[in-house]
Length: 305
Image (cartoon, rainbow, N blue to C red; front, side, top):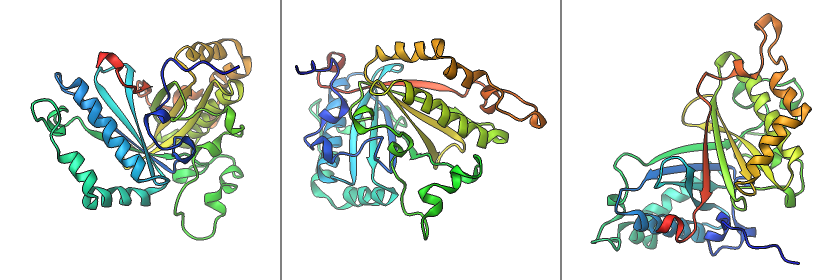
């Protein structure tokens, strides 16, 4: 018996490249999240441009870069999100070279769109295009401490010579591949961010990983959470990419935090030593800094475009 097709096609179906050859949030060494706000009147044209440019990069940079397009599920309408998955920071230089030397790429960027000859620069609100660079989190990252053991067992600590790349966030989750969701195969991607208090930057990272593990262990194949660090941006801002099988899976995540006592204990136990004032996870993050953005993989005809 075959499984029914998902209501919302996953992002890996946006491209002609086979899924086995794609990078995603599980195997990429770097993710660049690019966002931009479409202007009124260019809803359809802007989406076509976004998908076209994503496919050009993905098809030409197999194994180096894979780009998926998402829409905000609940939030700012007509705000597009590109997740640009790179094998490493070196791959970004290959992208820059492509923009400089690849004539097909340059022609696609320069050619006018279908709406009265409008180019891409007329489709988006000026100043709205922004990028955030995300690196898969590993124990001991950015000079933080765990327990003296885990940070010394990472590949980054034990390898000889300088770090030249990072393993994908998939390494954070000890589950078989068929039970892992990622940016290519999920039905909804919940992007959660929060800024750590500098005094608790080590404890906060440990909590971030343990909170992710609590979901991964209890909802295999339904929800997978990876933890990322922000590079070249706000220091000590943690990013969770929470991949859900569907929007309805959110109910299962809610239920887990209501009914599973072990999971609930994560949020109520004292995690800060008494000599440092004590406290739960809530002391580790700056007030009002935790935000969620739900993202739906774009598909043709979405939002009546």
